[in-house]
Image (cartoon, rainbow, N blue to C red; front, side):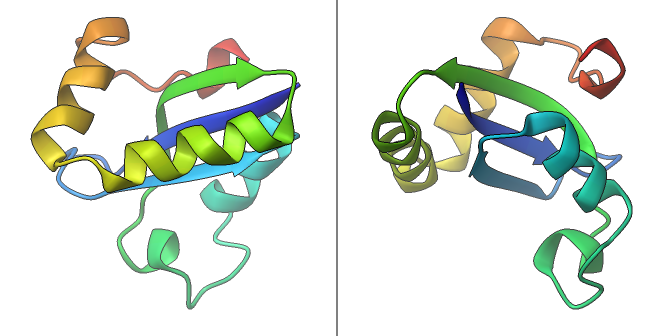
Amino acid sequence: MYYAYILANATNVAIYTGVTRDLVCRVAQHRAHADPASYTARYDITKLVYFEATPSIKSAIAREKQIKSWSRKRKNALVNRRNPGWTDLYPTL
């Protein structure tokens, strides 16, 4: 499976959208600030608030690009539909 996902910082002000094949490993890398110069490290974006799975890398990348093109209001609505409290989903993986 491949995943399109959204991470947020503790206050849900900064968000990041990404795509991966190994969601657990990729989120762990974000949480550990594997690349200290990255956007997610600079803004401490470590909370997994949304993800969706697809069997195709092409569809996962297309979905990531679609979500990235949306307004912040629409991204918030997407998260709110599945995770209204914006709780960290990482412990449930």
